[in-house]
Image (cartoon, rainbow, N blue to C red; front, side):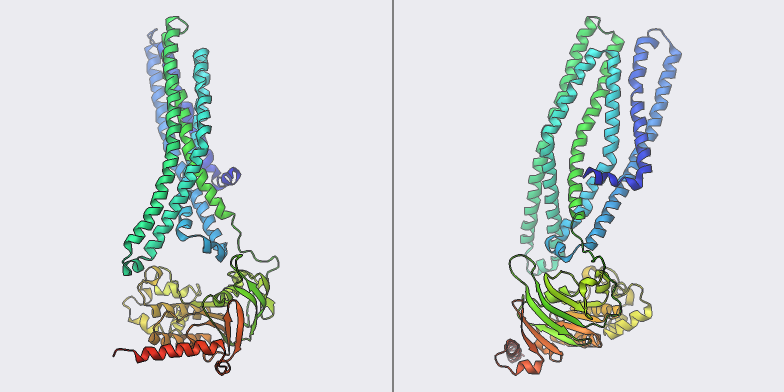
Length: 581
């Protein structure tokens, strides 16, 4: 893990080297004061060397002014280096997330991922900046001050040195507890972020059902877990710091008493004794600094561990000899395809069917039967376990993921729109599209009239997830996006099921226009929308139960399709009869 962490210093080695040089000079300047003090007390003051006193004091002032500039450099450029390393890690993690399969996002909550991208990486950047310079300054000062104390009185210096192993024994004793507490804290913070993200995203649902109290309870549960985790961490940290500080305080007392006895017995003169007492703080301060570094290290290490957990996830990888698929005609062939999300049960079991170029098939059947899964397997959002899926006679595993998906357009029930303008969201289908191409796509999606009615037209901001648009407007915008993409294969996954009947009719006209000349797969619960499909496939419990046209399937009174159709027609008729106006 340390090796991987150090790699992120590579692009910033110049700043890092200058930071270490500045840290070295700060540590060296720190040794000037006790040296000047000793000369003053033992020579310059007793012998009335006023010139040397002035020169020594002035030199000390100049050294401190230099240290002022060096400390500014360390604080400014050191933090800049840390921020840049944080940005590098965030970029790497974001790029990694783009390469991860759907299955990863099925198990990870958005808030948890955001916590890794923000809170965890901040702790890592603080460690990246402060860690090396603190260890370097503290370590150098500790060694130099100890050597200098030996030159003053080696017996007192050795007595003082005994405090070092005791302090580090305490550090080792509590390090594991602090590490575990820090890790649990980050997990708890990720849960808080996930809970908050979910609650804010669903705030309209919460208000509609007046369930604010439930959301508060869920948040409070995560918040309480965080408090418990931080309590464990701070308990270990409190014990660690208090005991460590007591050890240094204890040896201050020992040095004071032992030094006083040595002074009384003339084993040391007053100047050296005073210098020694002054220099003790120089020796103990870096020890405390190293002790404090332990807390920072635990937080940063726990954050980096969570970072590499994401970086070590398996990516979507193209096959070694994968090719770019361009100009697909759209003939799709499923042969004995089986798939399951978990080990519990098969979602698809030995599914076989074929769609000819430019034809439309409809997938119908009970919820959970495997219809949407088929739609997810074609663009390789998930990898099938057995059998084969081919397009134009070529297995889809022979294509690169990106080139395959460029040839497939998807319109779903749950339309996702990005914060931004209408133009930006439509152009997402083809980033280099001209304004003329945008205009044609909007007209074909029957959304141009709506755009022209807006005060800001194309530049109208639609809000987060398109909150300022109606369901029908969002759906037509997503259809315009696919028109712009212009793929040979189209997947309509319950694209109109969330709309009212009037809006559905308008959207259906746009979808019919979109499907012209394309191989189209339609998943629909409203069977009235798929009567004209070239073939209807009934799927239940992961298997194909029936195939045929609407007319063929409706003739069989025992068919699943016939029963579903009659049930929907009856429900629709009952609804019309019971309308109270």
